[in-house]
Length: 109
Image 1 (cartoon, rainbow, N blue to C red):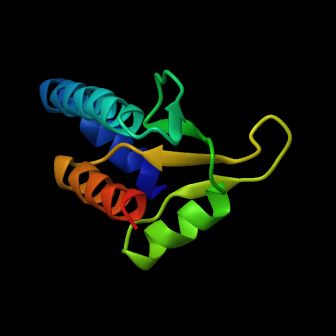
Image 2 (cartoon, rainbow, N blue to C red):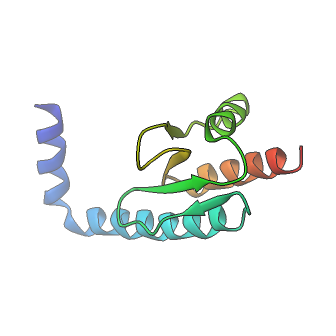
């Protein structure tokens, strides 16, 4: 019920809704470029609110745990087709910045 009410309210202010969508799309693209700068990550193109990355040359579960130890949460997959992948949600610019800092620490550890 609450989700329906929120969705209906957001439709009443389409300009704000579309502004939020544009900011999310821009941040997702920035996130994808930032992830691709790390040699051990292969981000897949995305049209969703997240970026899926194949982790190469290291263990995705270990990467997820190292990020969690730094306060950054990502989703880890160990299923056929998604083996050794992580999923990173697009959010605010400061969230992307924190992720990039943590990845840099892990990369240089």
